[in-house]
Image 1 (cartoon, helix red, strand yellow):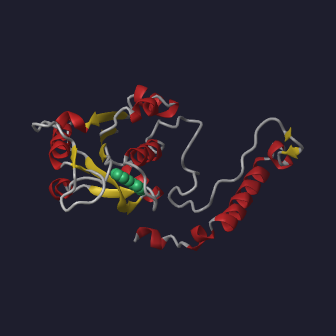
Image 2 (spheres, protein in one colour):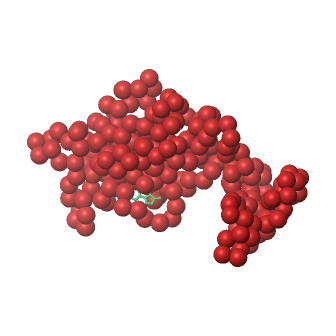
Image 3 (cartoon, rainbow, N blue to C red):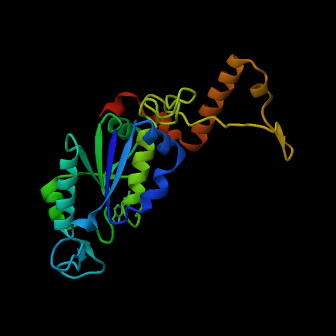
Length: 235
Ligand SMILES: Nc1cc(-c2ccc3cc[nH]c3c2)n[nH]1
């Protein structure tokens, strides 16, 4: 799977690309992530990538020309244009179902805004789909883009490795329960002991305990997840 990230701050992605899971996925040719600096397409006489908003108001607006030129050039680079996504507080809310949908794509272009956002002609001409990672306002689209990449790559076959699977993750398709609590060595830490059942070696009992913990935790923290019926998820 190929990700192209179009941004004014490509350096934000440098250390992120080195994080182990993603680095291994890139090394294993399972994933490619290409940050692109939109400033390189600011070729008007002032080489400006942003400008003051018509009609006045605070902040700056990202000019349409460098963005449209950059997107078109990047789309020409690959074997096909890919699915163009603009990160935006006004977009479709990201959830695991949308992550699973995105993981089926072979190429995603993630368009990251800054300042007061893009000139409207960017959306008029490129028709991107807008995705929000939540109802709060970030300073730019880059963190949201990383969230999408992070969530999607976990679902690409081979990325998590044989010993780990995303199947039992919270929110995975059909799974409406939160994760059970995890414990590791030492067995007792500051007087707090790991549950005996986890050290019993009785896998059936361990599975039952974990399921019960997930149900209790979900009831306590996210009872709304238990209200959803499976049919509604197809709407
Ligand atoms: N879910 C979410 C996305 C954003 C976002 C996305 C792009 C820009 C550009 C300037 N500010 C932005 C904020 N905030 N929250």
